[in-house]
Image: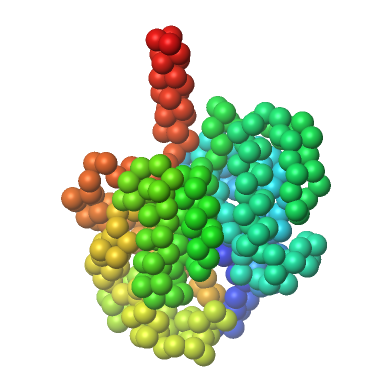
Length: 370
């Protein structure tokens, strides 16, 4: 089970001080948060991709490459990479390069994004968003696995004998999570390829995502990748943690009430009741997230959004200390209890290389017998 954090990279005014960080300060803060995540024992740091204010991470591979040079262990990922408006050739090359620089500590989450105007900025039509996502990923999947690709599709220039470079490290492409909050076609595509499915369930009730994850698991089994309970599932989450529950609520409430994505909607109490947002003591966060598999089954990755809504860097780093030292170790133990041995671990580059070598050896033995 992998635990980590993801950031959307918002530049939001701190409602308690009225101060807004500069873009430079926010970018540097995201790096500091990634380094802290590794220091406290988390497994994954993931950055979103946005091309409009108030967000700053327009070039995740640049940021992740810099973080890769300053870390040794943590997996670097995205949340999400826009498979609709980015050229799949450029995605193939950028992430293969990052994979080499990070010695394999890279995977990637594909998504359509939630900012409609980004489509025309990159010459695309939002009305074709799902079709773009499906076709672009079909090409990307081939670019990472075939040395030379001939391609003819609807949305980009045809390719003839094209080779993306560099080739994936150890001939094993970055593992792909398909992120979606509402689109069955994306769950279907993740299942078809045997990739991971990430349900960023931070805004909606769990019943919606139980149906979406259930569809992905069912189709994963249908396509012969394993049983439904062996499908690779990730979940989003949010928490604000203090030693005492009321202290957490008192401190977090002004951030919740004024954040553009929360404020002026449901109350903090209603939102925490209806979504994974948990504001309270370490034990309350542990209890809430230990129960996730009751709804979604055993899963492989849990990412938390911790650095949003104008929270100052000092507070975010304190939150990561609590998450890494008091919450995650207990969750690791509790989620390991009664976990079937047949449920796979979260994918890593090393494990996937070993699997590829094992499969190659089996094929050689089979060929020798024939």
